[in-house]
Image (cartoon, rainbow, N blue to C red; front, side, top):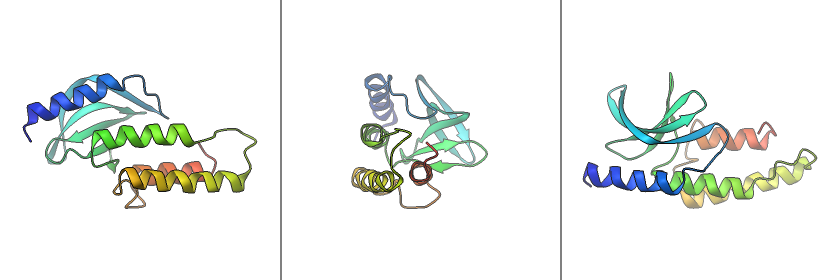
Length: 138
C-alpha cells in the first residue's frame, strides 16, 4: 500500500483516538519519521520515555528505546487492544487476587482475539502488561 495512503490512515486513527490515556501512553498527532536501527518508523507517541513507532515497511507497532518491544501488527489493532483492556480491567485495591487472575485471563483471551501476534512472545509489550496486571502491579 502507498505510504501516503497509510500515513492518512494513521492520521485518521490518531484524530479519532487522541483522547486515549493508557498507562504511560500519550499519542501525538504530529507524526515524525525516525530511523531506529536499520528501519524507519512513523513516530506517533510515547510510552513514558520510549517512543511508539510504526514500522514504515510492515506497519507493525513497537516501542523504541535502547530496546524495542513489539506491540501490535497494526495501529488499529493496538487501539482496539487498549480500549478492550481499559474497558475490562478493574483496578480496585480490594479486588480479590483470584478474581484478578480470572479477569486478566479473560483480558488476555480478548487481546489474542483482536491481534494474535500481540501475546505471541513473552517479551512483547502486551505480554509484559498482562504479567504486571496479573501481579497486581498496575
